[in-house]
Structures are given as C-alpha cells and as structure tokens.
Length: 262
Length: 324
Ligand SMILES: Cc1cc2nc3c(=O)[nH]c(=O)nc-3n(C[C@H](O)[C@H](O)[C@H](O)COP(=O)(O)OP(=O)(O)OC[C@H]3O[C@@H](n4cnc5c(N)ncnc54)[C@H](O)[C@@H]3O)c2cc1C
Ligand SMILES: Nc1ncnc2c1ncn2[C@@H]1O[C@H](COP(=O)(O)O)[C@@H](O)[C@H]1O
Image 1 (cartoon, rainbow over the protein chains, first blue to last red):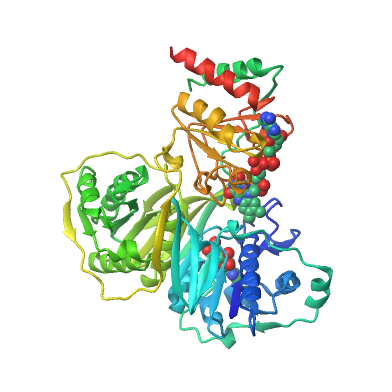
Image 2: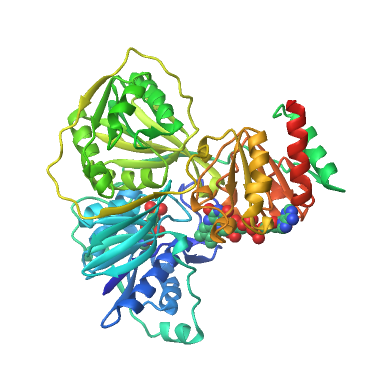
C-alpha cells in the first residue's frame, strides 16, 4: 500500500505564541518548530498500516512550509517514513484555508498513493477544514477521526469517533483518512531511525512545478485578518489550603454563594 | 453573500441548543445583509425537527428525509447543502463547530469556492462585509477575520455563543431535490455512548474529573452527585478518557469539546494547555487539586488544595442542604 501522510510544521505548542503586528502573521522565529502533534498520530497510523499491509508498502510524508523549515521533516523520516515531499514558495505566504488546501491538493496530485492520511487539526490554526477540502479537490472518499483501521478486501474498515459515540465505516481505496488521538501514541524515533533519516530523500517542489489555475498566498485567500487582541485576562484567583474535607467544601460553598452560583 | 443558511445537526430529529442559537443569529444577520434566513435539515427525523424549528424566525426550512443521509458518511449531506446553497443563491453558511460540523464545512468550502472562518463566537456585518471573531492559538488571541466579498462564505460557530430566541411568523417548509450521486463511504454501525446525559456544551455547570480520580468509579459516585446537585453534567480530561474511565465524548479540550458553562469545577485535573483551551472561557472556574502548584491554579478563580475524595462529598452535602 502506498501511503502519504500530510504533516504541518508548527511552533512548539508549549511555547508562548504571538502575532507580528506588522505582518499579522504568527512569529516563528526563536520558537522551535515541531511536527504538528496531531500529524504525529497520522504518521503513526500510516506506519502501522504499512507494517500490516507489507509487500512494497511505503510511507511518504508531505509538508507545505517556508523553506527554512524543511529539515524539520527529518523528524518524520526518523520515526520511519520512507521519504518526504516538500512544497515551498514565497508566493504561498499568507495563504488561508482555501489557498492552503488548493495548493496542497495540487502538490499531492504529483504523488502516487492509495491512502492519504491527514491530521485532524493543526495546533497553530485549528480550523480542521483542510482534510475535507483536500478530499473534495482530489475526489477521494473522506473518513475522519479514525481510531481503528482494518484492511478489508480492496478497501478499509474504519472505526471512527463521533460527537455521540462511534461508527464503523467501510470505504474503498484510494481514500482520505484523518486520525483521532485514540489511534495510538506516536512512536519515538530510534537512534537507528535518526541516523537513517539523514540519508532519506526530501523532494522539493515549488509552485512552478504545479499547474495552478488560481492565485494562492494572500491574494488568493478568501479571508483576511482584520484585527487581533489578547482576550480579557483571566487573573489568577485565590488559593485555599483545605485542612480537611469539610473545610475545603465550605471554602468552595462560600465562594459559590458569593458568586450567586448556588 | 446576501442570504444566511444554517446547517442543522441532529440525530433522528434530536438536536442541540446550538441549532436554535444559529436560527436566531441567522435572522439577525439576514436582516443586516438584506436577504433571507434559511435552514437545511437532512436525514431521519428531519421533518419532525423542521416542525419545531418553525418556532424560530426563519424564512424557509429545506428538508429531506433521504435514507442515504444516514447510510453514508457525510457525502449526501455535502451534496444536499450544495444543492440548497446553489438554489438559494449567494449566502453566508453557518455550521456548528463540532466534530462533524468541521468535516462538512471543509468539504463544502470547495464545492462553493467559499472562504471559511472557524470557531466563531461573534459575527458582524460592516459595509456589507461579514466579520467573524474567533479565539485563536488556543485562546491566546482573539482575531477578527473578514470573509472577502464573494458569493459564498462559511463560518463554523462555537455552541453557546448566541442567544436562542423563538419568534417570527413560521417558516415555509420545502422539500429538497435528491442529488443524482452515488456514495463511497458506507456507515455500517452507528453507536451512541453515554447517551441521555445533558449535552456537555450546553450544560450551565460542568464538573470535570481527571487522572487524580484514579478510576472510573469516582465519576459515578463523586462527580455525578455533585453535578446533579448543581444542575450540571460531568466532563473529563483526556487522561481520564484515555484510561477508559469515561467515553471520549466527555473529553474537554483541544481534541474534545469546548465548553463555556457558568461554573466549571475541575477535580484532579492539572490544567495542561490542551485542556485549558477547551474550558478557559467558562464563567467561574474552581479547581480541587492535591497540589496547590498545579498549573490550573493559574487560571482558576478559586483553587482549593486538598483531597478530592474528602472535599467533593462534603460539598455535595452542603449544596443539597442549602436547597432544603
Ligand atoms: C495533541 C494533544 C492533544 C491533547 N488534547 C487534550 C484534550 O483535548 N483535553 C485534555 O484534557 N487533554 C489533552 N491532552 C493531554 C494533556 O496534555 C494532559 O496530558 C491531560 O490534560 C492531563 O490530564 P489530567 O489533568 O487529568 O492528568 P494529570 O496531568 O496527571 O493531572 C492529575 C492531577 O490530579 C491531581 N490529584 C491527584 N490525586 C488527587 C486527589 N486525590 N485529589 C485532588 N487532586 C488529585 C494531581 O495533583 C494532578 O494535578 C492532549 C495532549 C496532546 C499531546
Ligand atoms: N501546510 C501544511 N502542510 C502539510 N499538511 C498540512 C498543512 N496545513 C494543514 N495540513 C494538514 O491538515 C490537517 C488539518 O489542518 P487544519 O485544517 O489547518 O487544522 C493537519 O493536521 C495537517 O495534516
């Protein structure tokens, strides 16, 4: 099975984030770049399916990002991906969901795959709309929030999380899958994996390699950031050390009374 | 963008409060844009639900009870929405920001060549342009994005962001034409877990438990009675859901639900950033934690440092007694 996993490169989720008031973009300098945590689960799913399918199976990771972030993809190669494809072009700067999905879809058309696995969400922008948009552009069945996947005949049987519980869904291949975190914890890169990653290929693409019919980047975007502000600060409240259960309960009860919540 | 269309999420005709919030907001925005307010209701139970929606100030409710809607994964929904939007004409489409709402939105935006703003808590129209406000970067920023002038635009709306106010003269209910399509991803089984509970996103009070509870029982014996005494419901951290103590649909945070109750009580939850983004917009936050230095203290209005197993039963008693 030929599998492609999309991976966004994002600022460390645990680092403080800010937007440059001039460019209105996320400041990435001085913050370590990592694989979007959700995409690590997508990659884990890809690697597991590759192992299960056996044969000539392979996993390619794909990312669209500014050129200097390219080497971050070695982290995915160290986890076990066979190779990588990287789309970068200054004309992509400022792309919104529409333009991003449009460009990624065109780049993915250059790759050959039976299964496309996309993370469910990005840690830095969190629209969750890219997977569905990719499925539409590529004309693929779209099964989201997978927590368990079985290879069933020519297709897949997927157990997926829903707002109410879960569903079992059967889909033919090629298809697009997004993973829930319940799929399983992403593996760590082994030392051998890290060494091996240095020799793996990262194929670079620019917009010149794609045939786009519409503009991307800021001018090709359908939304525009107008303003931003920090939310109303939520100050640190009081801390009460409870001598025993009743004292703790009383402190909360009195507080709720004061706030007219009981 | 002239009209406003809401996508109504439901299961067998059972819907959430967000539907009525969207219906109310659709009217307000349609009036500002000089257009009409529409709703699209699909699948088993749609006709009955459309009847109830007539109590809200919509102009037209488009309905189909096509069996394919529930037999296949979202493909029919996207087709029907496309058919409806094309028939209605240029419009702003409001979709609940839920797991499946996000999926629908991502696909529809390609069909309609629409821009999208996600997790919106406020919508304004200024000089005919639709402006959407949403928390970003895990709530570290509040951004306002314009949907650039175009035929269609999409906003996914965070539940609990608008009032739900009945009114209006009763919308016309009209059937939707079945799109001529075949579908690939078939739903074989659809299982509900933790059904019958008050919807987490709508509960005025949420009592959430974490790893500190040590197992599934305390959710039943400790948290549920407290939640009931307060007229609320039980939620959980990912650690608790991962351990299998509660179903995943009770998980609060980045990968779970976003809740905005009047009162949030976090019991045995440390307050990791991924949990915080799902509950930081709550009215009042109270934490009960053994460790006074747990990160949750930084964004709680009251942190009580102590043993949850001793504090919670006493608290439930105090509240019960006060109610008499
Ligand atoms: C990509 C990604 C997405 C994630 N999404 C989410 C998400 O959506 N939601 C979410 O919640 N997490 C999410 N997480 C996980 C998150 O990082 C934390 O691991 C998780 O929230 C921790 O849960 P917890 O607070 O219950 O457990 P812990 O961090 O282990 O905290 C347990 C707390 O209980 C206290 N305690 C112990 N015993 C008692 C007692 N008897 N009485 C009182 N207090 C006690 C301890 O002092 C401690 O503070 C995500 C992580 C990743 C990487
Ligand atoms: N620039 C990108 N490069 C590669 N994959 C991306 C990119 N942006 C989004 N994705 C994929 O789309 C998923 C959802 O992103 P989003 O809709 O932005 O929350 C992510 O988890 C990634 O797998």
